[in-house]
Image 1 (cartoon, rainbow, N blue to C red):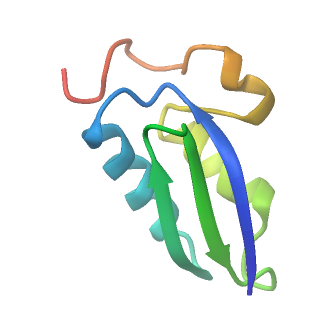
Image 2 (tube, one colour; image 1 turned 90 degrees about the horizontal axis):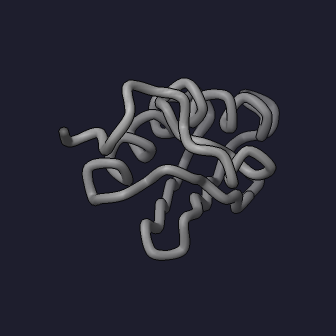
Length: 84
C-alpha cells in the first residue's frame, strides 16, 4: 500500500469533503481516505497495483475540484458549492 497527500481546490463545506471522499473511496484499490477542508488536501492509502495517483487525481477532477497545479484555478463545474 502507498500513501499520498495532494492539494484539492474548490472545497467550501463538509458536503464538498464528503463528495471528494466518496469519489476516492469508489476507486478500486483505495483503502483509507482522509479529506481535510481546512488544509485543502486529501490523504489516500491505495494499492499501487490496482490504481495510480494520476487516476485518483482524475477522479477528484471529475467530481468538480482542482488538484495540485490546478489548485489555483476554480473547479470546473456549475459554479458555487456542491450544496447549492
